[in-house]
Length: 96
Image 1: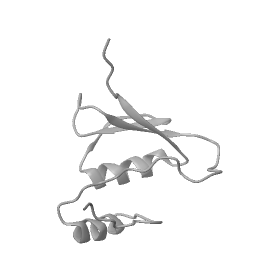
Image 2 (image 1 turned 180 degrees about the horizontal axis):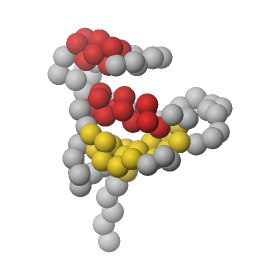
Image 3 (image 1 turned 180 degrees about the vertical axis):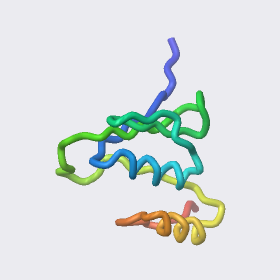
Image 4 (image 1 turned 90 degrees about the vertical axis):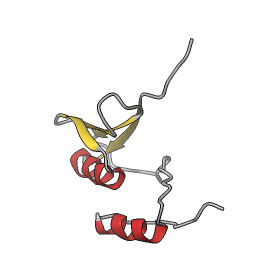
């Protein structure tokens, strides 16, 4: 038996805003949207996708998930992502 990663699910308080932010960062598109969830992906059928789920609970501990990105031009991408609304820590650690 084989298994594939289908989606990464992220619970959040504002799924539309977070999904649109990450779609812009990754140059992905909205694949599905309803009032409770939004799925983004590189294209229909491309795996994995990311599903953002609106939940009523407020965040109570630090994030247990982070996405590592590999830009061609790190300085330019950090500036672009901050321009899209990124907040918090963008460590800017380069791979060696």
